[in-house]
Amino acid sequence: MDKKQININASKALLLNDVDNIVIAINNMEAYEHLDDFDITLDSPILSGQKIARLDIAKDSPIYKYGTIIGFANTDLLKGQVLTNSNVVFKEFGREHEYCSKYVPTTFVNSSSERTFSGFKRSDGRVGTRNFIAVVSTVNCSATVVHEIASYFTPEKLTNYPNVDGVAAFSHSTGCGMELSGEPMNLLYRTLGGYISHPNVASSLVVGLGCERCQVGGLFSHQGLSENENLKTLVMQENGGTTATIKEGIKIVEGMLEKANGIFREEVPISNLMVGLQCGGSDAFSSISANPSLGKAVDILVSYGGTAILSETPEIYGVENTLTARAVNSLVAEKLLDRVNWWKNVYAIGRDVQINGIVSPGNQKGGLANILEKSLGSAMKGGTTGLMEVYNYADRINEKGFVFMDTPGFDPVSATGQIAGGANLIAFTTGRGSCFGARPTPSIKLATNSSLYKKMYEDMDINCGLVIDGDKDIEEMGKIIFEEFISFASGKKTKSEILNLGRHEFAPWQIGITG
Image: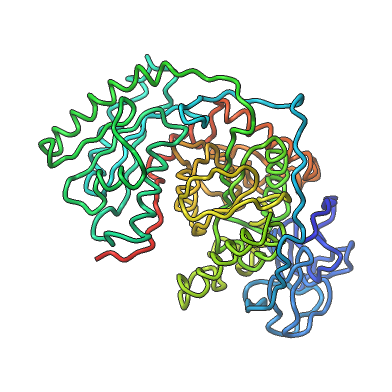
């Protein structure tokens, strides 16, 4: 896809690539309105972000956006006709995979120019951007207990612990009635283990019921965990039930607070940042403003030795060949293709989910016809540097640079996997207006357009709509985002944190059966 700078001006529509046979409406327009720049007269009313035929397009011909196929005309289309998912059809087509052909080794910033942020150093060498105490349930049966323990520690009770960001409960809807062994259980173990030992967590209390399949002992054995002063456990059936466990849990957390409060922020290199990349409630402007701008920020982060995690496997489908071309070696390329093929040929086969074509109603209203068009924008979050590794869901991420983690497109589930892998920041682009938090990791919300930013200012952190407005270019917007990475990592509160979001968004991926 063409990465050249888009020239935003006073036009009513945008041509993103000279190869494209469509243009994108910048604003809502009425039928028969004329677009002087392209000598086009609209055949019907159009919403901002929707597509307009730039010329006549014959039935079954490909539709090009950014010089990339996003679908096919299901009938003869006339110049000026508005294109939607009703006349742009999704279907499979061949894509050439030229493994590693566009891989370029990263040019790192000179050490004398190293940037820093203020973070919490951990004993395992990782660095936190927040300092939480986590209360984690092994099974849904202990969900109420972990929330009661955490909710006891109100902001008023934590006043004397200014270095502690909070006591956070992490409950989920599984842990029993599931497969006792194999990947479904291993995935749950990895997710819980990743939160228990997360760099944004100073101490953890793990609470089980006692008779569940996801036993505390099994979890600890699988993840190589053992009790110590920063990691305690409670089992309800051994501790006398609900009330007794809540009381004991509160007592344990009280004992953890003083030590957690004794941990102070220190200046550390930017290379300790690991940013999970998310997009939700996408629209046609996602690929024009927020996603490519975030991609520029990612390139800067990688040049400083940091890590960025692209995920949401269904939302790279159709452009996965652009990522395999950036792979550091053929093994990494094959890993990525294996995950895409598993989704297509095993997990989602015959299911009415977006990888098989149709995106959500909100995406459609925002001007996205199908998964191919959505993927085109989604992959832009990953910037342009080499793809260094591919991970399974919730695997601990050890590789630096740009990496990929296999996750669903559903944002809470995807972000949960990234955080379990070690992400200490989340950067989340949205065009329709996703409201999301992700304890213990701050979630930075990037609006694709100024209208959304103004309408949902309470939820949005950064206005990438400045690109659409012509006030900033992609390069400038990327630098702004990167600087905000440093600010938020150093303690600046995101809008979602101010709103106290993230208390209920812990959502491990459930890939097995419930029996």
